[in-house]
Length: 473
Image (cartoon, rainbow, N blue to C red; front, side):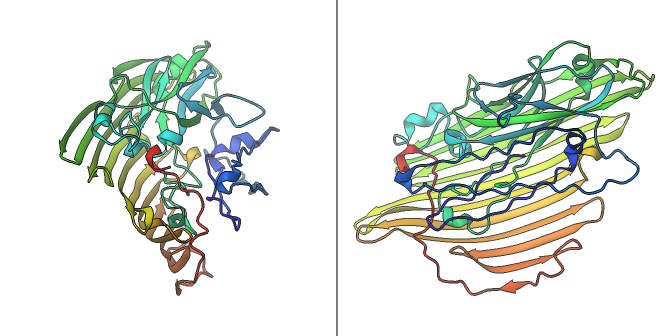
């Protein structure tokens, strides 16, 4: 589970995050250690001198008498494998985990956690290295706006993911994200790969290296620091206990995405467009110890376009991008994994410096649209749609305290193959929810749609903002 914190403020913060752990049920069947790693930053210069008071609890519900495919037969961690702290690692360098699957493994699925941090938090605003000289110094970081999370088996590409741009609670204007954080900030999305075609390799009784890496579209494919990554592999075993056999019959997987960069520079304006696409197609025949043969097909495709506009000597910046794609696997014609997604994002950022003071403003318009069908032990088939538009500013007058403002409007909907539905629409103004409506058959029956009058708030109590270029820090 990858989460984060609410942005600190002098008056203190209180928040609650929930996570469904049903897909990891196997981990709770034997004694083990649970680690909650919630790092704290203490920096009195920025007013960060508080301490966390954390309550962590796990609620386990009685399981049905029959298992019914509700859990896998094994979970293998991908990470540092530390028993003293959380197992995530920083990329670069790439994360390598030594793995040896049980000999009778017949299916395997990887789940990847990956989130950008520091110079990679706003990677969608990073410019290609070849275009950095065209921009004012420290306007943004380099390595371009394209990122791809890769999973490799013994150095061979087994799957990839276009990461969702999570907007954390300190993004540009912290007041924007109060009291409603962006989608994924407290429960970041994960990415799945069907590793079944590689089972004959991973279950041959020898050690193998499974790698999680994050790459760019630069000629050397390097990124800045850093991304936090980790993951796991869940396996299904054949009851015979006999070794699985098989072979990969088709493997078409270019190691990196095909990318293209174009742009113009005219007086004080710079425009850059980066596009990329990637496909993968793997087929294999898997024969279990029981004698059953399965024809496995694993396909992926992704498309990415990012357009950056820097106007008036980069005092007004716009980054517009969209990543779309689909991952699809079938075993003997039956769909096992189907992930169809679209991540639209537009960010405006402008600076102001005049006789009255200085500051900046921003607009975020972003969405998360995903239809995901997984093996039964990994969760239900879900359709999620989220769209949010937020606008905010932070201004420091020369003769007074800092002034902040923020408004947001969002819509969220959910449905699954079990017939559950839920939707919610929210509006907020300067840290106060001004409209809250929800519905669907799993909505809180006690909740009443409401419209509120914005309350007076101390908009100087706004937390520490994080921006995409050191020029603005």
